[in-house]
View 1: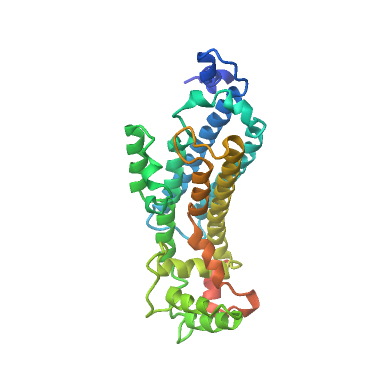
View 2: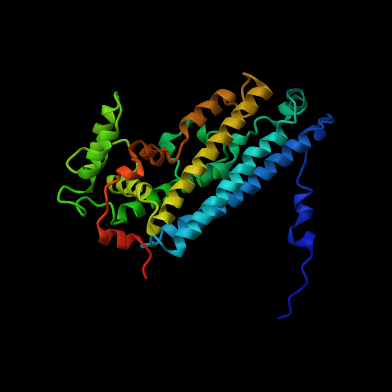
Length: 337
């Protein structure tokens, strides 16, 4: 069939987008010149959240497979998409600069007309957090989390929280990896050998690190019950970080690093948002009834999704102190000829 010509504004549905701004102040006959900026900024955020949602879902689809090879196209595709999420988050952080051109007095011109609407009601952001792996029981302000949502939106968010998050899927993938299983390098096992080298690296006052290392990585020890990463997944993740220079582990390392980048950028966005709210409304409550900047500060401190991956850096050694890998393992981790 002959393809009909596509017109730019029709394709982008600009008639809908450019006519989707309806300032509340105008409805009340009040002049508030910066409400247009406020609306467009938040609409732009929601469009970027939708794109993040799309990218995260594609990565989740990859790790929902029963088998994902460490050096496969799937891994590199996942890394690519996580990097795109990071770039989007950089835009979201920098977009605060445009919002900050609005002064507190400019905001007060229309703020009271917005009640009880609030950015806290952004279900796309809540869904993106849930898809990445922020569990409900680790959220700050659980009693307030969905209380401001319509019933259908509350159900939608809760339904997404029941699905396997990216954190859960990657934890399962790491747990299946064979390279960090105990006992394949020496008769005492890789992790016993690593413990000796790690103990030598500790400074005065860091002896508790060794006790924690033993519970994290050695057999026969009670694994910390508060961790979402299981022992096999923690072993694999640390092993990947230690031996990332081998070709087979570089893709998985980039993947883990991509998750940490996302966590860092989310934190930057939360703190930037918090500081902007402090500047705009001081100690007043938010339009949705929250404690405003105080709530945002607590959320920023608590909502790290991949902190358990970041904490593994406590157990790193410099390269020249790492246990030497057997040649058959080196061969498995290298390019095949």
